[in-house]
Length: 345
Length: 86
Image 1 (cartoon, rainbow over the protein chains, first blue to last red):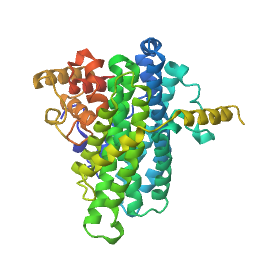
Image 2 (tube, rainbow over the protein chains, first blue to last red; image 1 turned 30 degrees about the vertical axis):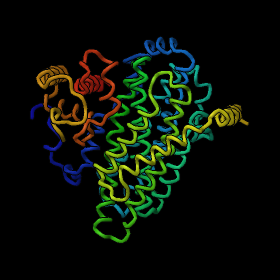
Image 3 (cartoon, each protein chain N blue to C red; image 1 turned 90 degrees about the vertical axis):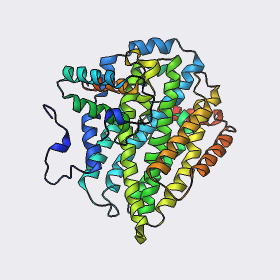
Image 4 (tube, helix red, strand yellow; image 1 turned 135 degrees about the vertical axis):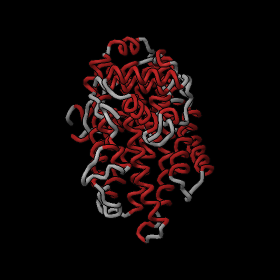
């Protein structure tokens, strides 16, 4: 190859350039180092502001529900990235610096995603976000909309699972944490969000937001592949019969079933609960999420602990359960708490 | 890594010749080899899996960018060109 050769043709010393983790890291360097500030300068806020101002209040509310869980979710995964950096150096994995290199790239990218949504809300959507500026790392809480739906609970659960995995967790703990983070949050909740934004963009083409989502979803794709590689490594050791690894597949399955409840509740919250003004379609959104989950668990991981049919049934049960949800009281409660925190009480 | 023309799992509306021409033009503009551009565009779509699973890009072509002929590969190429400016 000529002036810009592929990385696999360059010799290295201690780094294993044939490793999938290295490939993911190198692609993060090549594709994931975009500059969020340059993106907003390059595309500009003006066209998006014009479209935003043309939306009615219910349409704006649908966007606000989606973007609320994205900014809080991105901050949550960025915060937990430090725990992933620790977990991948666990003695239960084949030790490799390539995993740690990829985890460090993931941490940078998740922080940048939070930055993009912060810039976007501040400069385009602030009228629908009277409460979003508090940093949960400085004593704040998640946005009331996030707290009200399954996503908020899922992000809190994520922190617990990642802490357990990072602080001496066994392979089943690590598998639960990786399933929740890479399959649940990144692989279904976020990808479901991209599905929703694609539908919503038909009526409300927010160009800069779409570009941001494109870069973010590309980064998340590498993170999902990374997580699935980690899980495959644990599953292989379980199948080899190593005693410490027994229970890994069950842990993955149990966590996936727990998470589908949170995810489906979030899908209902951003669609049918507000009469779906931008035509996402709750059922199609859940079905898309279930198919993505099936691809990851049964095609990629070849999981024996459960079946695609059982997962679809769990998803259908979660749909029924979500339809009884009432979020208004919870939003009101967290509005009040948020206001108190903003006032410094 | 998967060849751009071998990726599965999405509706590709443009023919391979159009893709190749677009890749070559982009490579020329960016001062890169067509092979490297193709590799990057494929990775945007499949994250190394061989399937177009990038919901945010592959599903976004239709309403967002008429220039990409509703083809996820051309949408990903446009994104890569923008990425090189950022």
